[in-house]
Each structure stands twice: as C-alpha cells, then as structure tokens.
Length: 138
Image (cartoon, rainbow, N blue to C red; front, top):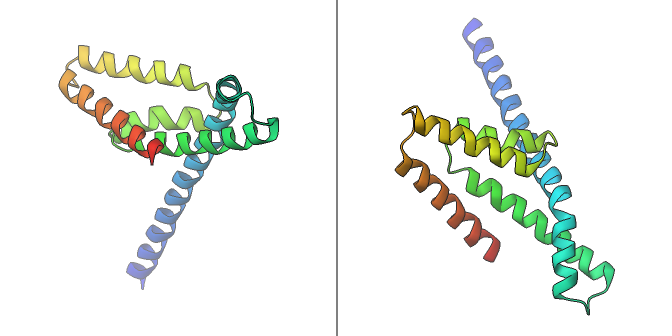
C-alpha cells in the first residue's frame, strides 16, 4: 500500500512538472509575441503598404506566434541548463535580447572555462537555427 501511495505521489509530482513546463512554454510564446509584434508590424507595413491595418495585425500576430513556437522547437536542441536560460526569463516577461545576450555570455564563459567545446556550441546553434528556419518556412 505504501509503495502504491509513493508511486501515486510521484506521478502527481511528475504531472505538475509537466504542467509547469507547458505553462512556461505558453508564457514564452505570449511574451515573445508581445515583444516581437511591434517590430514585425513595422516591417510588414513597410513591405506591404496595400494591406489594411486589420489585415496587417492579423498576419503579424500569426507570424510572431509561429516564430515563438519555432524558437521553442529550436531551443529544444540545447541541453536543459542552456534551454532554461533561454526560455524561462522570456516566459517571465524579460527582454528577449537581454536573455539572448545572457545565454551567449554563459556559453562563452563555459567555453573559456573548458565546460563546453566551441564545436559543440557551434553545432547546437547551427542546429537550432536550421530547425527554426525550417519551422518558420513550413
């Protein structure tokens, strides 16, 4: 009986961890989209002046949401410690550029201290960039 209760409690804890991860992803998409929308709207309106404001906004919102989900997919290739440094701050509403700079600094520090090879870091970055590009173009 105790064994079953222990298993049940572990299962519930595991489900909560999954739910938090899912919430972090949802928050990441939300905050990423909020931060990127003005930039995409500006670019789209200059590229497509014939579109109405409503159509521009709709297209921009769809695009930034897709970009955010593609970013998550690309960041999924990184080991957990780097992935968390890239996703959690943005999920909490922090600036995307500052978060990216912090991640780059961490990776550079790890390379300098011998915890990460340049080749491995380059492979992760290249793989993530390719994944994002394929995702965005699909």
